Length: 543
Picture 1 (cartoon, rainbow, N blue to C red):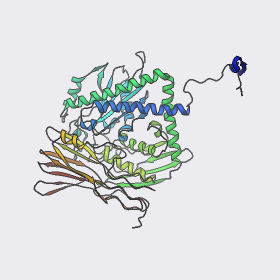
Picture 2: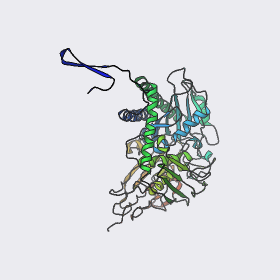
Picture 3: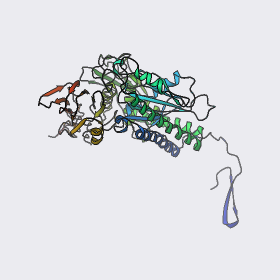
Picture 4: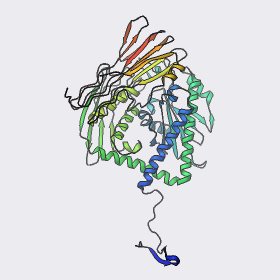
């Protein structure tokens, strides 16, 4: 068969020669239409760029939080600040970073190659103050008037100031009590690190950073990670051309949008109200427009912004919605801005999921974002909900250490929950015991599964854990947690998971019990015990 516009003839050696006799018409620009194979290729290339950024950040960072616990995220963005792809890092970081990029774009109309910006402002795309974001514009050549792309890395720093070392005060009521707020600061100008200016910023204010040298060490690692992302994007452009790369950045978003629209049609309207230990409630109503294949996620009725620090900035709430709807899609696609296009998010002003400055927010990043995730999973009738990760912080004049401790995940149709697992919005790990004991004056007595703490059901919820940390020096320990009064709900007749508890076993045998938030001074020989909640069960149990 010879296609139209071609001519065939037999030549010497029994070969067939094909020759075009009419010119091709209607030729499209490279990448104008998404080729399925190229789309899959670019999906993986973009994710790989972010993964390489993450490896460089992990290998060059100083703090345990970033280097060992992997409490960081890396991603790349198009020239308008839309999230294109990420590595499988921290969902609460990734879904919120686009707003940080757009803040940098809006406030710096005269950016140039070699500039790098830093911010942690929770009211402009940040999560909480210890999570510092470094943003690098990517210029393909010096003549470009605006960056072609952006790369960014966000890492949890060991201390950024505040009323308590480690910048995780359990009783903060204002953002200034939680540390130094960085709002669109130029960290590198034309390739030159502004170290003195950055030190001045970190050392200023009512509650300055306690270790600016460590902050700068981790920021340098973030700059290096961004440089890796920038060089990989430039190599990609050199191989495929800038037109094709830009086109496929749009195609991966369009593909993600279509994937979410398909899954929306399987959802039903509904409402759910989730109580927190502090008396607040998260209300969410989902309205599905099957014809438009879109959904409205309405948080009207949610508690007003709180006097405590369980407020979640708008960017964090958006990240939770983005994450949930991405996980409902079975297709292997990057989490990106396209996932949000079919969704309308309604957040009342000055509610706990959209607080106004100067509200405190340090616990909203992990605890409240997980509650939003749980509420959305219940409303979508998905069995992947989990209760809350506990935030433990240990500190004295020389040391600051922070970790999130896993609980049990919820069961679902045809599967049991998993015991002691980091899921959903955190996705970090715990520091290896050897590293923990080498770097800090503590001993990990034990870390074990909390048997039978998962909710009963046809499919049982995962068990929580019990973590015992013994102190070798006087320190202050604080806990930010949830699920001490209300257990992880069950589904389809399954029972709720067991609630958690926090207490200190004193060296003299006394036991001091703590609420869902608390702070306590500990001495040599005292043991901090954290019992994390179990996940909810699924289906009625035969027992």
